[in-house]
Image 1: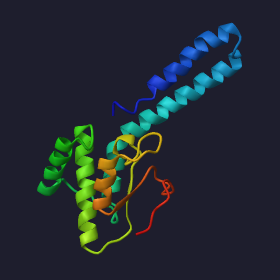
Image 2: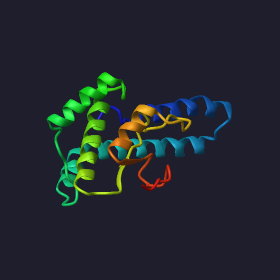
Image 3: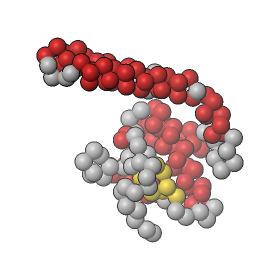
Length: 161
């Protein structure tokens, strides 16, 4: 709830308007419209955040979505990941462990085409310029899971086994 706050970005634009409008870089009409849009932006995010618990409850009720708790195997894997330095943050260890153990179980049960969509750069098996992160890449490969960098399922292009 505290990470997704529009105030920081909106205030940066307001600061820009506060010196650009008097200097003639932005017209008063443009500044007024921008401030109105910023207020609508902040209000929308505030409404969405206020409804977040209801959104999660609605998702949890979907028949094709399974929410699971970390079990002992996943917690042990999270500890091993932390000790091996595979991910930097404790929450990342837990997510990664859940994905890796869950993917391995699906593979063992005969599932193929297992994917993980990950927008968080900390858990992507490549760095910001596209170089492979060997520890993460190996962990995903051993779990037979293909990682996409976003939810379009387009990048990076999937390699077929």
